[in-house]
Image 1 (cartoon, rainbow, N blue to C red):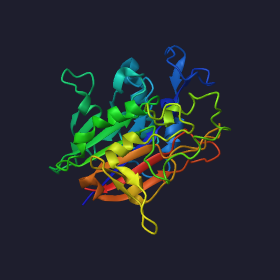
Image 2: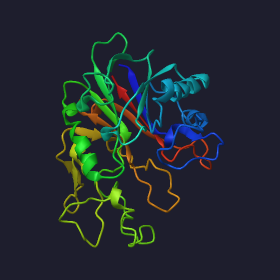
Image 3: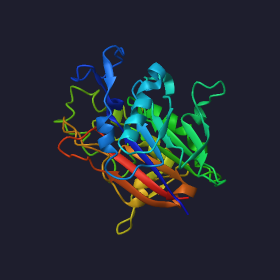
Length: 321
C-alpha cells in the first residue's frame, strides 16, 4: 500500500503583482507592468511535506508568454527543496477569465496517462482539467480533477457540478479538488451571517448574492438562504436527525467530502477584512473507492499567522492506494 498525497491551495491571484510591488485592481488588466512573486507559495508549501499532486487555484495568466508563470512557480518550489513539478494548465467554464487551476505533478511519484487540455481538438467539457494517472509500476488508474466554482451564481455552480456526475462511478477512483465558492449544507458548514445587516447592508443586496440561493419562490424573501446546491448535488443534502439522533446526508450522486469524512469543519478561508464569516469553500471530494481509502485530511495554517500568504488555506488528503 502506498500513500498518495493530493493538496489544494487557492493561491491568491497566483502570486501576480504589479511590477512596482504595490498591487493591482482585481480585474482583467493588461499583462503590461505585471509580474509574479512566488515567495508566498513557497512559504505556504513549507508547512509540511510536498504532495505528489498539487492543485493550485487562481493561476492568473499562467498560460501566457509560454506558460512563464506556471514554470516560474514550479521552479520556485524546486529551488526551495520541493519536487521537480510539471505544470498542467487548466481552463474555466464559459471563459470567465484567465484564472484557471493549474495541476503540478511530481512525475517521480505519478505516471500521467492523460491530461485533458481544453486546447485539444477532442476536448469535451465533461473531461475538463482531468488527469488520468497511476502509481509507478501499478496498473490501477485514478482520476484527479481540478475545478473552480463560479463566483457569481449558484445556478452556474450547480450546472458545472452536473458535468462531474459520471466521475462518481465506482470503476475508477476519483478525487475532485478546488475552490467551489460554496459550502455543503448543514449547520457546521453554512454561513450564518447572511442576514447580518452590519455585514450585508439591505441597500446593497448584490453583496451576499453569490452566497445565496435564488429561485422565483425566494425572490423578494425577507431573509437570505445559503446556497449549497452544487456540493449537495455531488455529496447529498443535509437532513437533521430526530431529537436525540444525528443528522445525515441523503441523495447526491456519490461523492464524499474529505473534510466531512474526517470530521473537520475548519474554514479554509482566513478571517475576512469586512467581517464576513470565513467558511470551508475549498474542498477535496472523493468517490467511493477513494473515500474508502482516506487516511488523513488536513487544513494547513499559515507559516506566519500574522502575515498570511494567501486569503485561502492549503488543504491536503492522503489516500491509501
